[in-house]
Length: 321
Length: 250
Image 1 (cartoon, one colour):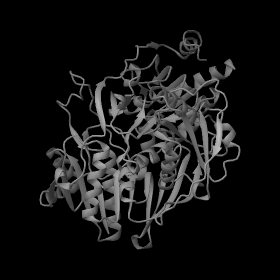
Image 2 (cartoon, rainbow over the protein chains, first blue to last red):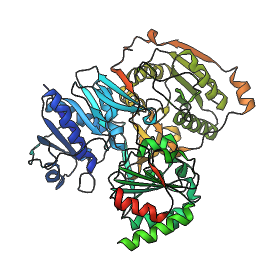
Image 3 (cartoon, rainbow over the protein chains, first blue to last red):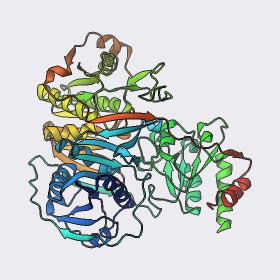
């Protein structure tokens, strides 16, 4: 039986939780097929990332270092991942369903004529996979009808491997023929924030159109976000209105989160938003419209004017600390 | 310059979607069908390039049933020049990417612009697959597009998890539109009148000489798990007490 290869993301010398979770999902897939899990790490100078990668529970870590792999562009990464899959006897490649995973995985699938399932939320014992469609209103059980398979996994649906022994690590040298029309990386304007990463945070406070302006996100919502040590999110409506950048968007077309505590402020709860947060453990909704759909998924709903309730909540949370 | 754009027929995003009685798909009765909202953004971007350049041609493609004509007419009414309907029975994203590869071979566009995902199956796959099949550069999830070198190359800003990434690449290429690329126009009444006379070519996918079988079989579909009903709290104090005592998350 073939091995299961995992695409290892890394940035700034560390590995995101999304990759640790992808290893966890890959173990479930490997349990069904009987193969090993192999974490692929691609980059120019991997340095300390190699050691971090060895702690995630994969059977083995395979490192490929090349100047052509400095940046995460889909065309070059596809060539590399296909070559690593062949070199490691892998017949399934698992990505986290992050923007990087969603960018590369389908391209790899087409390159290998592999069937692909994106944003998978469960692995069944018979090897079938479950994935959401229609903004999470439907969950489909799908079967991939090819020998070589590509899967991206929803990061809130799986867990990292706990208490794993360190993986063996090996370097693999590949010659990648970068095509003449390859994409060139120009720059990354990284979001700088002292807050937790939205998709990894234990607590998230999200704002909607009810905030009425970008300034109110800063003056009304952010104090509550910081009092709770939370990450900040937003509904698509708030992003559409230009109140906050798109990387805060939670929902069908944004990020999927499942924090321990989610507080939705001035969010009506369109199905597209609910698709991104309804697996949160505890959901709180604050909205002045008692009929807002978000109350149908909230554990605790407070029907109130957010401009009064949020400052009061912020002060009272601060006084708990 | 020639630009190829896509228009997938999907349920209106405001529609409530329910699994059908035999668990094979969705209940289609009463659904209003629209152009995939991300494809609308792609169409709008192509039209803006045409308006800026003066003489580009915008060709719009839809793959699916004969009903996709409606979505193609919408795109033509927005301002696309002509349409291609490829009839295919329930193709999966891999099959759609094979079909589009053939259409690109016929049309030789300089640029393909598609929505980043269709809001029905939420796969987010076809643009990337098409780019690979063609051996073209790809830029997914873009929020800005700038053409340079007389339309010979492009620079795109992509909305990625960690911020905004800028890429540059030669054309032809495939790009997929994210939400903030633009705000699509509504079709005007004269636009709708003109669209009736614009050419729409019909192609049967089975005539393209490609494998159309699904590589992903849908075994069954289920509704999502229900969340237990919560309760309304009357005050901030009651909320804090509930989060501390009952939920133990504060």
